[in-house]
Image (tube, rainbow over all chains, first blue to last red; front, side, top):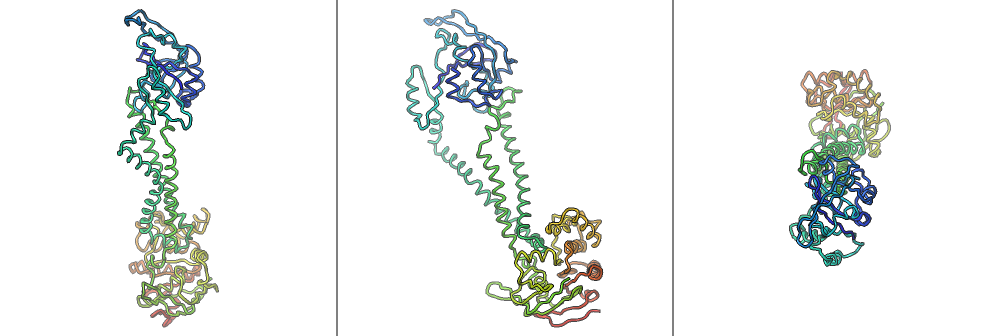
Length: 330
Length: 228
């Protein structure tokens, strides 16, 4: 378990700072490389491990026109613990050591698509932010959040209870619990069940659907195929012809389908993300929004179409030439 | 070169519980290099005979010997090879591939035979010239007249240089002038290129080009006329 504290500091562009222990945070959250501008999570850890060095979000980095190595001042107001009146200001100069999109589990709000990329956040070690963590600093000293690395098979309810029992903890959010609550709704259950079933059967549906379409199309073209077979096309050559045609259709369909899919993804992650203009940063890299089920479908759909074409070609290869060519009984 | 002999050829079509006997023990022969016309009333079995000679259908009984080998004994694979290289079929309704151009249609049997690009190109050019379709080579069937389509179909039938041509009512869909041009082309193919040709037709003009005319009635050869 690692503890992260949010610090309200005064800095340009309304940045929020998080203080965390680099070793425990990286051990628990295990952020992947794509969170970091240089793609190197280990370097991100090393930056935080150096006192005085911070990681900042891309949005903050761009808005403040910063460079790696720049030093920026952080300010906070000191108050008297007894009556909360002003007693001075503290300043800490920190060095920009690296750029991140966001760090998992550490952001001002849930990093959902739409606002994730536009957060001004500074990540620093507890050692770097030590002076701001003093209880006399205005409003601060409360625990921001806990990140837990559950052991395999561990019951999150037990862990939640123990975390909730910690002094000062007001609420504990568990993703599994959120999903469980959502699934309590019959509508959500039915929807997710339907989507799951669709994905599971989509290749089967494709095979049957495309097979029917190809079958109907081949019926229309019986005379054409019969003419070709009568002129010496073997069963395999006829099958090659049909499968070849289907393959071209598949390629065109795939190109359009993948294009529309990627275009939609780009639209969703860049345009729908709204926020300030000129920050074309997706909250997640494209490979991340390309789930394995989509990859399965991209591969499964052509396979289904080829299988359907092959099945249809078996029928076509065995058509009654004399009957189809209307030569019988003359 | 083909030497065709049929012996006791029978073909019975079954449609549900009823049977139609198309050929009733038909005996005939066609010598190498002959141009033979087959005539008879509708439903007498002449087209059925052509189907059997072309390996498009199988007989119910009897023998069909082409160069000494019995087509009845050939397996499906051998029958495909026979249709590909030994016989060229010309249909009444042309049966060209509608999405291919004239030259592509002619090239199709060459592709099926696995011929290389240079051989295909050379043969395609020869055949387009032979059937007089060089100027219309890049047109699709729906852009061609009936006579032009039939010329292309003859080019298709000749693609792999088969010694035997079988034509089923080749002038049936053509006007008088175009039909005559097609018949003239048959005569040229027979005389100049030594093709053996069997033509099923109602067209009386065929007597001007055929060596013999076979009359079929009720599934049997009922008569034979030596043409002029």
